[in-house]
Amino acid sequence: MSIICESNWIDTFWLTKVFDELLSHIFTQNVLAEVVGNLKNQLIKAYAEMNDFNELIWENMPMNFWIRCGGAVVFDHEPLLNLWDKVCSSADCGIIKLLSTVIYNYLIELKPYLPRLQVILSFARNS
Image (tube, helix red, strand yellow):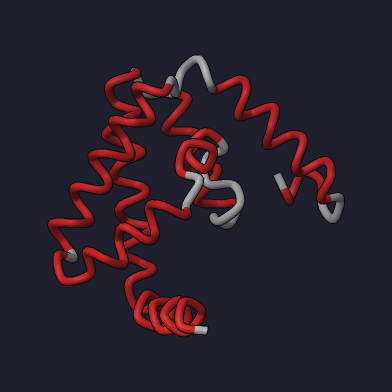
C-alpha cells in the first residue's frame, strides 16, 4: 500500500482498511482463530523457554487485522506481492496453511531481535 500511495499515509490507511473489509468474508473469525491458533502452537513448540514472552506478544499483536491486511505494515513490497499472489490463487483450506507458514517464517526471522525486545519490555514493566 505504501508503494501505491507513496508518502500519503492517509491513503495507505484507508486502502488497508478497505482490504480488511473486502477480505473479512474470506478470513472469517473462525479462519483467523485457526490460523492464529496453529501459529501460536508452532511457536510455543519452537520456543518453549519463552512462554511468558509469547503470551505478551499474543496479547499485544492485532493478529486478525494484520492477517487480513496481508502484513502490509511489516513486509517489504516484494514479499507482500508474492503473498497476495499465493492468497489469491489458493483455496480456503490452503490459505490457512499458507498464512500459518508465512507468519511462522516471519517470526523465525525476528528471533535474533526478540531478546532485545524482551529486555526493553522488562524495563518498561519495571519502570
